[in-house]
Image 1: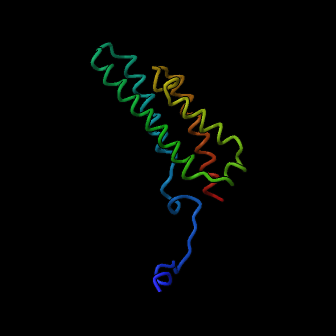
Image 2: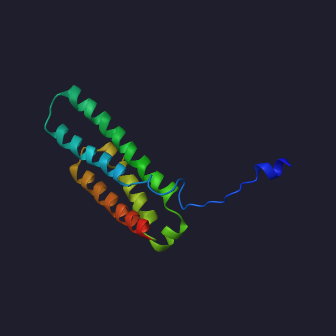
Image 3: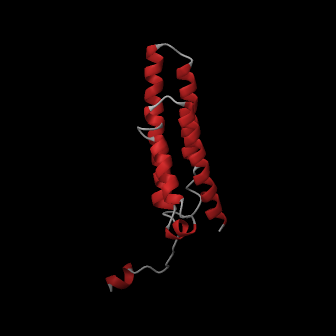
Length: 133
């Protein structure tokens, strides 16, 4: 009797954790834009207290970039996406490394920030193609 009451009456499926509309690479891009802006502000300011605060914020933003990319990679993208876009694993890996300690998190380099933004844009292009399908 209890088994009949607890059995689902409607079966649903989705290609991501929640119905579409909750994932967006723009979140990673916004944080990466912040990194680029902070790099420019630090370059123009010699105040050690300002620089320390700015670098801390930049490192936090870099962690957020990695978080948002990993959410896309682990929660949104599924095996059919990786089959259709075999470069996707490599793109996410390269982008998260560009956000990490050997990239934007650990450097004050505008070129690294630009490279990070370019990788996020490549991921976003694939993301939006998958949303059309």
